Image (cartoon, rainbow, N blue to C red):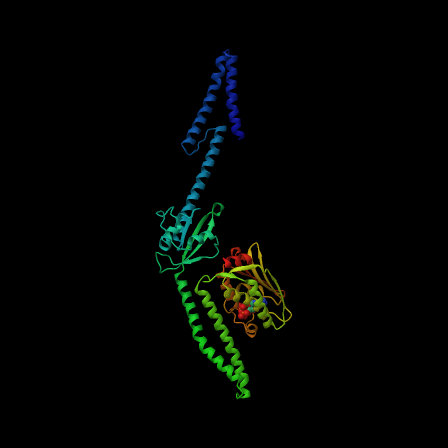
Length: 440
Ligand code: ADP
């Protein structure tokens, strides 16, 4: 900048000195000054017009640059041009790489606009969900992939859980659709469709096997349990046989409970949501569960309840009863004498919640993520002793999934455990409102 300014001022000063010299030699000022300054002005004009033309024609400014301040301006513009070119190249490279990656993904990817119309799709989308891009550009997504629940699924905005569908164009495959909002005010949607046919079939085989095996075992076990019952109580049973027979009866009863729980789980797995939904009188259910829990506890625990008597829930009564009673009975089975058990049923800003809190021994943090796995027990021996099947929390999780609810577990060793079932607000019903709709 300093040198450019020096050059520029020396040009101007040179022109002025030339004019002064001409005047001293007797020339008239009327033509001396225009003539002396003309070369300087012409140079400025020439460099300005050249720059304007180059910018207009989007020409690249390249050295050699003129000297002086104009040279500085030319050099700076050339630098901006170079930076712009680099970032454009980077953008093109990124777009190409993104497109190549999206094309290589085996999952279907579809971008929907605000009105849920197709904006873009990768090649896998054509194979898996029949969305051909660019041919289907602008078509409503639900037209291309018709399904009775699809539109409401996209509208519902619960994108954490995927939706499994057998598409109309190919009933032999099973797809898992996951939808993620993105973009300006999260109005656009990214649909990811994954082929889960294999996993789905394996899962069906496992489900059917467990259901059939449990079903086949139920009758013989019931017969054995019946005979053992009779034998233990029969007067002519030898005294030294009574203890082994009673142990056998106890173990058979345990097996029967496991079979019953396995059959419950199989039934829950048959459909994604309960077939019958009604307004469930949760306060009433809690009072019944409390009576059973008190019988199970035999006055070894202290019970407290905090129940909103007017809060009912849209759901399936037997399923909810089974989930809630599992949580309450667990608090009785897995805590020692003197433990306080608090049962809550309230509505807050997140929706209705059923909670069971105890101040028992609690559960170590490493066990918490695995509690709802089938047959997972923190202490195997103690759980068996307390009559647990290890399937209770798996049943709770399934029931809650079917009611669009989630199970939260919080615990600290030595301080107790809190199990909370959180339901979506739309499932909450006011007692009067529910009774009124029944009368209607
Ligand atoms: P179980 O039939 O053994 O009760 P669950 O699936 O219901 O099986 O529970 C899994 C395990 O979680 C139990 O074996 C127990 O170790 C632990 N658990 C459940 N509830 C409680 C609780 N309130 N306090 C301490 N541990 C618990």
